[in-house]
Length: 444
Image 1 (cartoon, rainbow, N blue to C red):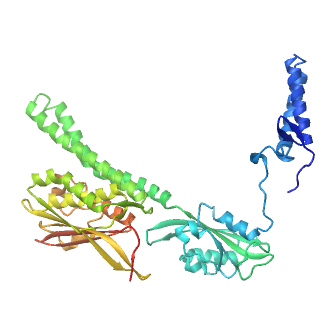
Image 2: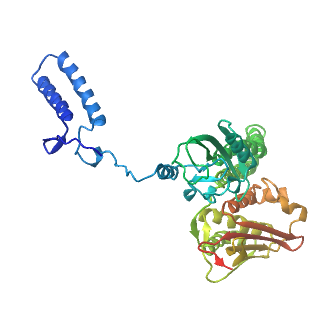
């Protein structure tokens, strides 16, 4: 980089000639103001001096030698334009892929975006973005079309809503060096993927919340309104009726509070369902805490909770407060809906399953079994639906909102786990939860 060799040292600050001239004008102006000169002339001189100072400071490098903050960043002449482009891509907040005229990947920032982790150079884009809509849009752009914007959905491992921006690029020689057709005027397509999942979920959450809340709150609100009207009228001076009605009103208010809390909890979980948690959780400790908290309810129902846990269980990958909610729902249901005077068995174990990549995925498995009346087979597939109840009357008497198992399902989906439900009439029900264990998987 060329430097101005003619420097002037002022108070240890190295200035170029122009910088020195600007500083001198500013000093003269200050003296004029201090001596009480004409008010118009100093103002005009101040404006001119300031404008010149700013211009020379940033355009002509007046303060050369003033330290690192004022120096241009040197550029290594050996760095190729392709390397610069790749460095820029690696810092993009969204997944970015550049494909050549054959649809093969030239550049990507796959290192920081798991969504395009398979976007290796030379691989065809159809093996990375498995959406016919996006592939067709890329084809139209490569055939000479303009920009394309398409929305698509990826169903696995977690459903995501994405928008793809496809932009044609005429890249000079040297910018993209990995493509077979690299050269002056070569046609490429810049593919940018933006995740709309959070926005879509938030929109759906608002719609569902209004619909569900209006439906489920209608009955308790009508009940409260009726009791209030009665207490103001016929039962105004009836102390016994007043106490009875106030007790029922309290139950209805508590039910509404539980319902709203469950709706809000479900909405928050659905909003973040596409974000996999990464904390390490001691599942055994979580289950023991849940059992300790439910112990008074179990004693009230004359139910014994038996816990069996394998030794040296690994930590699971997840969010502790959400897993606590899962096991609290399952064990609480087993206590409330099992037979009075019965028992609930809770078992923790480690399981391994073969994966396609030749490894054995480890799961921390929790099984909750009750010995109640069981669930009819036709109801089992629908148990995780919102507000679905096998016995609505009993569910409401027990304080259920019909959202517990829906919450469990969405939490398990977020943890990339599995849930199985087995039941036979007269033999109780078995709920099995599998959470991926932390650490490395075992090789086959």
